[in-house]
Length: 175
Image 1 (cartoon, one colour):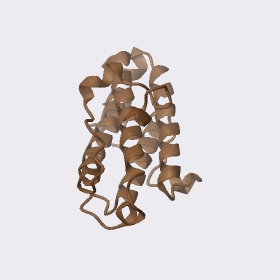
Image 2 (image 1 turned 135 degrees about the vertical axis):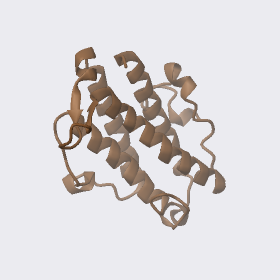
Image 3 (image 1 turned 60 degrees about the vertical axis):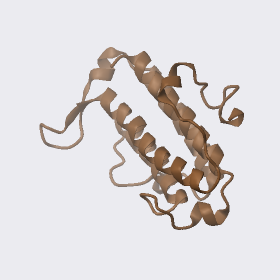
Image 4 (image 1 turned 60 degrees about the horizontal axis):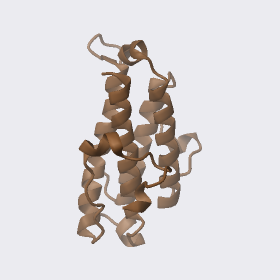
């Protein structure tokens, strides 16, 4: 995969994260922290999981394997929606900067996920996994938000080439 294509996927990921987190601000505390039909039990825990996985895989790609630890084990406070959203915006910017720094050789460099010979993948695939994993959880969160009366609207990948980066004019605030 070439860098421009991967960067378009990362832009979509960042934009969709910002959009879904901005929409979640409309949830009551009970809806945000209460048990729901979500993979991680609550919207709160699902958002924490989403941003933690983004962080840990980017760290792995940069040579810092954090193992079985979580972002909050490393001093990142993710105790409410505002801190999760702020962390997500920062992490998406770190991922953007990281991917923009990679040349073709770095994108295709093999990375060992474990000790076995079958556990080696190109770096671009790990970044694509970050985006795909986010899509899974954003989809379930979008369904939940819609059930709570707060649809985030369309989250279409086909818009990726023209989506704004979060923080740029016209991001989630313009939903």
